[in-house]
Length: 321
Picture 1 (tube, rainbow, N blue to C red):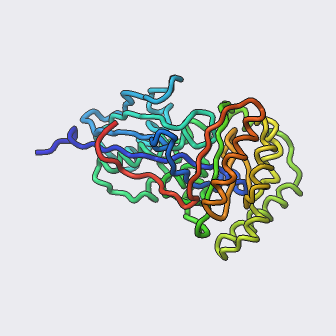
Picture 2: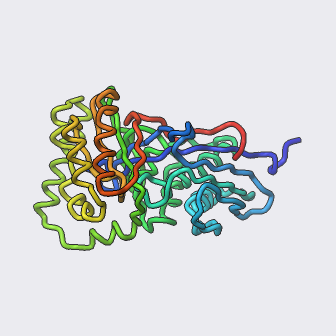
Picture 3: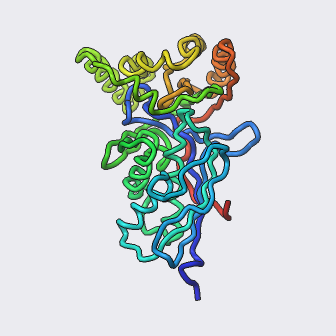
């Protein structure tokens, strides 16, 4: 007869592009792609159910930098704790985490661990909840790193594609056919707390109005499949000007993307990665190396990725890590 200790599952969550220029802390998309060695860009978590009622993290691999093993202080552990409390479970969980996203890259590393962990925990329990119903628990996990409930990475990493999120729920947004992202990650760490500190300055109401106009146009463009309006709207006139000086070569990279035909380009998450959207994969592939070259002109080495904006989100994997 199967026991609690026999239940286990492994899940993967892809990297993500947070903010998507127009939706600070609200909008993002999955970045479901592979590294140059063929390994997927994302985090994996294996979860075992345990008789003991606590949540423990037994291993964290993939990074040289130590991360918290205490469940409440770790994004994966905190997400599973929230899931355990909400379902009133009397058993616990043991977690093994593999980090596949560089820290301080602006690619949603902290959120990916939270998403993968709660998806794996749910699968180990027989999948009583849907992916969408797991959102608040993954969001709680993200709080361990960011200190706030913003789902611009959590939502799309969980559901895939492009998502609009708030503190209660996330919804999938329509994505025009063929829409493709290029993301260039420089070998440079920009801590989220530093990127956040750059925003601790007064903003003018006119700046908020201008950004709201961009957001409205962006949403209309998605629902009406209007590429021209999307090109006018995919821009960050609020946050980007404050954070751009923190990223060496940002404006050169953005200009290279636009000159190569990008619909728009901006900072991925808190940076330093830069993303650009293109109408199709062929255009994205042509622009990829120009964007890299612009970054490398500052002396930084880079890694670049191409992925559909409507990429896959989290999924359960066979085996364990």
